[in-house]
Image (cartoon, helix red, strand yellow):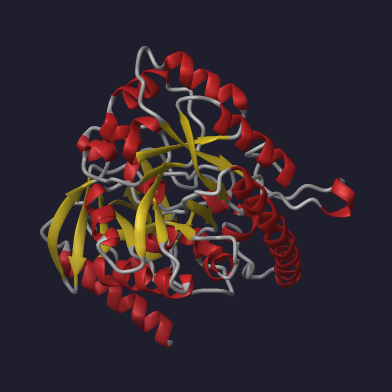
Length: 404
């Protein structure tokens, strides 16, 4: 048995012992792995604070845990309703990473001094400012605003575009123009700039079995990082010329922490998936994390030799549909999906030699493809320390909060 296989077998034994008194389905977070991943993110950030992406955690208790560690400061949220809830819960620095059309939420934000001081909203279009003003309903509080710079890489004179379709603000001049619009509009204060390079931070560059593709990704990412660093520097300088008191410049993601942190213009890094390390983050040359969040499904059938069936398990992740968006059977090692069924809504058949050693009621452990989306399936996360469950904390869903 290889050292890697031995480690995985030991983890399976620990998790089975820790949850022997609990019925599956259930989800766990291995706190030793979670904390080690947090330490690694902080190390890679090189002293720049990490703003925690809440969409990748979706559990208030774990957000509090990581924010209590050195090197972490603030939350990057995903909806306005979530931002307001977090602010009311005591989180005093919440950056909403996406523009919102939540008129009721903006009315609440602009009517409450505490919320207005704690929450920063994202803007990349003057129409969003008008929507906020129309939603105020008498609320006079100043709204903190962050501008988003488009990070897409556009080689060959713009004939090719690589990167997420996010902000329309690509050039420093475009960002500066909107900065002027914000500063001239009463009731708003420009405090930050954000740029998320998803084609670098969220795309693995060591794809197993695809050496040529991996080399191409690394070449693309190196060129994209160079272009963005230069453009981001100019864009931030242009915005600071309009708003000298700019509080922060946010960039990066789990897969690009050390590269983004090295940029002079960036003052803080965004990261969240690196705490749980889902399966999409297995294929990076720049870092290697420890899987910290897993879920277990019980064996409920044995259809034949080399096959077991577990309850449920069809928890696909967002993004372009494909095999990489499905959870992966993780422990015991060696199980695989049936190609005709995949991960099912109610039941999931699994093939492989380990199936013959599994009994009815045994647990099969899975890793989700993405991080926080797992929490939309479970009301609680069991906290594992060593071979014991030492606590249980509610997810957003467990607190009755489903923001998307």
